Length: 429
Image 1 (cartoon, rainbow, N blue to C red):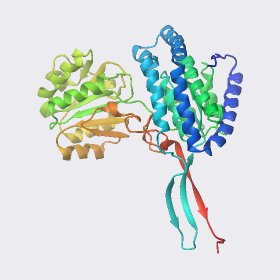
Image 2: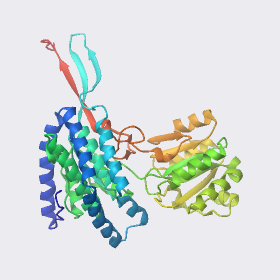
Image 3: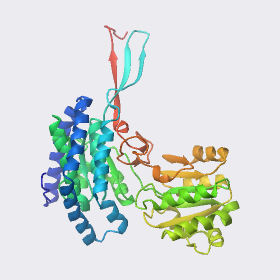
Image 4: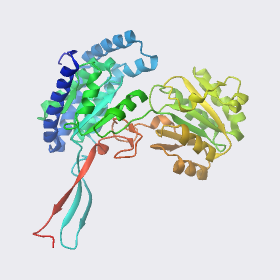
C-alpha cells in the first residue's frame, strides 16, 4: 500500500495539486464512462478483497487520524464517526461487493419514441463525468463514494476531513488497486493529499474540469460550498429529523421507534433530533418515552406543555427547534393536531427525514403528503435514512435539494442522460 504524503506549501502549490488531480480525473472519466460493466464490477470486487487484505494497514492509518482528532479536540460524536474497527472495515468491503452486484446504471434506455418522420429518439443514461466530493470525518465515505462513482462510470476526487487524511488515503489505495487490476485507470479514484483548507476552495474553482460537487458534513461546510462553488452542487444538508407521535400511535411501537431513532447512533444524519407529540396523549405517552431516553443517557428538552407532562424534561430554547445535536439530546414540542405537527416540521426541519407514528392511516397519509422532506416514514425509525437500507448498496449522502437528486444518492442518482437519435436520411423541411 502506498504511504500517505502530507503535503504542505503555498496556496498556489495546493491549487496546482488540485488542478493536476482534476486533469487526471477528466482523462480517466472518458475511459471509465465507456467501460463495460464487467470491468467496473471486477474493480469493485478486487477493491473489496484488497480492503480485507489491508485491514491492519487501514487500522494503523486510522489510529494516526484518531490521535490527530483527539489532539484537535474533536467531540465524542466526531471521534465515533472517525473511528474504524475490523467490523466497520468489513462493512466497507461488503458494501463494495453489494454495489458491484447492482444493475448497471449506464446505457439504460429511460424513454424512447418514434416520430412521424421515422426518427427513432431514445433517452439513454450516461455518467456525470468528474465528481468532487467534500466530506468530514467518516473515512467509510471514501469507500462508499469511490464505489458508487466507479459503478456509475464517474471519476471522483475525494476531499475528506483533515482528521481522516491517512484513513481515506489507505482506503482509496485499495480501490485504486482494484481499478488497476481490472485494466481501468487508477486515477478514476483520487484523494487530495493535504490537510490544507485551501484545497476545498481550489476544487470549487475548477469548473472546467469538475462537473459536480457533493458536500457531506456540517452546516458550515455545506454553506461554504454552496456560497463559493462555481460548480453545480448536490447538497447534503444537516439532518434535523423529527418523529411525530400522533394520538393514534401504539405506545409500545412509539417507545421502540423513538429510542432506536435517537440512540442507535446519535452521530449520524438520520438520528432523530426532535419529537412532536399530540396534546391528547402527551401525559400518557411522553413519560414512558422519556423514561427510555433518560435511562439511555439522553437529555430531553421541551416546551412548557412537555415540561408539565414529565418533570425530567428541561426547558428548551428557541434554537433547540432547528438544532442538529448529533449527541444524546432531543427536543420535544407538544401540538394540538396533525396540521400543527406538519407546520412545525416544515418550519424547523432540514427537509431530510421525518417520521410519523400512528395507527390512523388517514393521518399518516396526510403527514406523508404534506411534510416537505426528502424522506418521510410511517411507523419506522428515521435511522433507515440510508442508501444501503434502501437497497442502493451505499450512498454518497442524503440530498435535501430538489434539483437532479433527492434523498439517498446512489449509483443511479450519479447519472445523467443524453438523447440518441437514429434516422434513415431525414432532413428537416
